[in-house]
Length: 297
Length: 276
Image 1 (cartoon, rainbow over the protein chains, first blue to last red):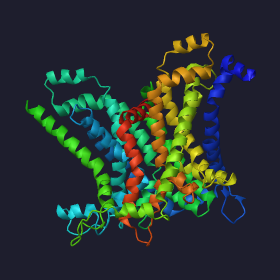
Image 2 (image 1 turned 180 degrees about the horizontal axis):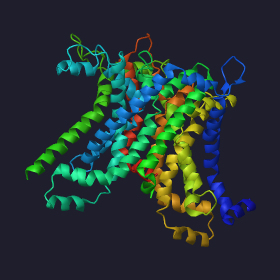
Image 3 (image 1 turned 90 degrees about the vertical axis):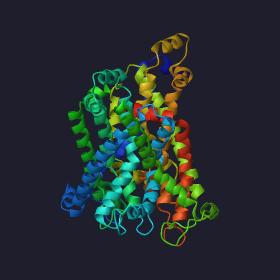
Image 4 (image 1 turned 120 degrees about the vertical axis):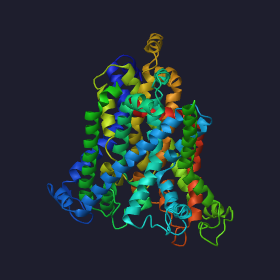
């Protein structure tokens, strides 16, 4: 007992490591080890019921030769670009609204958290019903408003499925964007707007000359977080379309998952490594162009 | 003055749009869960309110909806507790003590958080199978703690760094150990930060999908998002009324959390993202 007490009170370095022990151990065992394991597994034939075999890079060769893999890469990148841009757009609108002194702001702030807080798998089920061909809410609204005079096959056609996934994802993740942007907005001094108002500028000029430039670093951070997150998209697609129709909405994560489930760990690991490299490249891109360091301060 | 009324109108439209945008799927879920026919939008079908969907899924023992909910809540509570505690320990050492790795640990964790879950799920599955944890709470709790640590650490760092070091010095002179200082001084002062972290990690763990899908098999450990995603009902076809009733039951805990702790959640998200 006494020796432990000594370590705690006397030796700063020792106690620092003791304090960090749980964090270090869990990161090593549950992230670092699996990452290394995945890297190694991706070089092997690792299939249930077959003996393992070292393959060098042939899992990767197989991967790059598979049109379904490229389809999933294309789908994922297109999805990331379209949905992140839309989220930024809506997120900016909502953040501007919430930054104003409006009646019921507390309730609006709770409302904005609802899509974020509901588990994706569960909201995906609700969306599935909203997109329903025969009695879905969306087709009902489209028919009533005269936007379309026939029922649209939202989840059964590849373009419909893509749009459905984007709508649901934008709904789910705009709140996160909003909150980050809101934090950025609240740091912009009100005095600037007052001064600009006296100078006779209009609302749009104030947005593009004050708000947008000052918000830019925060926008970059928000985009970084959302892009890295969007590129891993899995649960929404798993529940909403299952990757269909005809594999047209299979994201890279879902593509990898399908191989893990069928027992091909070597190939699935190779795909996982690619997902990781993609995410890492994007992160580096942002850090380079977004001057990320300044934001951290 | 004309511009002012324009802005007023824009604010009103913006708020209305925000409400409709955010809440309509939720309202739709509620509506269907209380209606006897999910297809009441079609011609000749009427909306008849009923509690039957709730009664059915709660009484039918083969649905296990309450088991899933119980599993989710236990896993999320335990994960949130340990994540917050571990992150607090680390954050204390990083903000208070000088040691090699002081800068490296948070940066490495931030780097680790960039690994997509899919890139560790396969190997983790093998590890968990090897130790016999598949379909137990451990298979979820340990990975969730690790997933939550980077965010938790960054939030705690920003709270702890605002607490004056003089307090530590005074307590050290009085003969307190480092752990006592953390427990009796720093934690109580940083309570809002602890609460933010705890709630965020709770919600993230409650919502997690991929690991729960891979590492659980049945109602002994399966969490509610998986239960509802795989809910096919008793007769093959998707029973929308039952599914929506189950969904409402599942989201009650998180809706309550955001209703009561909105401020802490927004603070936590802000600290974690903008500073981290």
